[in-house]
Amino acid sequence: MSAQRVAAIAREWPAGARLLLLHGYDPSASADHATRICKGLVAADNPAGLERLTGDQIITDPQALVAAASAISMFGGQTVVRVDGVSDKAAPALTLLLEGPAGNPVIAVAEGLRKSSPLLVLAKQPGVLVIESKEARPGDLSAFAGEFGLAIDREAAAMLFEACAGERALIRRELEKIALYLDAAPDRQKPLDTATLAAVGAGIEPFDQNELNAAVLTGRADVAAMVATLPEGLGIMALRGIGKQLATLLELRLEMDRGASAQAAIEAARPPVFWKEKPVFAAALRRFSSAALADALADVLAVERAVKSSGSLGELEVHAALLRLAR
Image 1: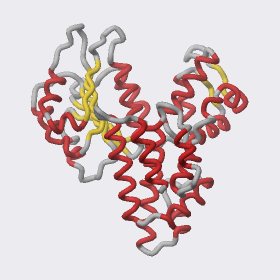
Image 2: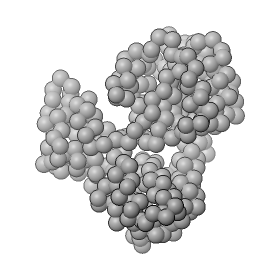
Image 3: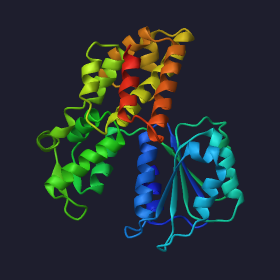
């Protein structure tokens, strides 16, 4: 359902809509939705068609969002305003936006929001669209692959999903690379099976998100070597992969604090914990307290925000965070 809505909005911004709020506990999915919508709405020949802001910017200067939404492009056509890293503290800026005259489409990308979040309260106003991102599943890869002209079979979908640890951005990157290699396109469908994936998608092998997750969460001695060989540009994705695991572990640890055993908490988890990850989760639950998991998750989110800000040390900050977690 979300994919259909995203595709429809990417084709044409809905009449009367002022703001699209993308949120959920799969940040990579929200970011992917935003990228697809911006790509669809912004004309290729309009270099000023996309205005990017951060959540911190509009918290500090709410008028910056209003100005971007009301700006007129020198090249003609509409300008799309994308705001990444939006938090509850950005509610005043979004309120100011909605109180002003209609202008350019605004896409706000947030992480998982509480039901009582002021952003979700704000989203009940007319002109606000909301899409909550759910975690990707292996079955979703059929639709993803179809966008690139690839007809992926079930075994190949499971293989690619596991290799990319469910990270949509990484999955799409691999599918795009494979489509280029096979000369596939929506009007030139090519089959993608496990043999083809193993031969063409060799680039996914050096980075095994599941193995990195296991090493970090259980404090293995080879974490430093794995971090040192992390492919350039994939640090944020690796960090997000760890963050999703930490969020799940925190929920399970809270169940243990209420009296459940580690095994019972893992078996009752929804969505279910993948069978290969159960031993890692059990070891991590013995290693971390609820407070430690909450601190670790906060650290991951803070590092991701820091990496996106100006003056950041980039992936070095990600590497340092992964090593801190392992220690």
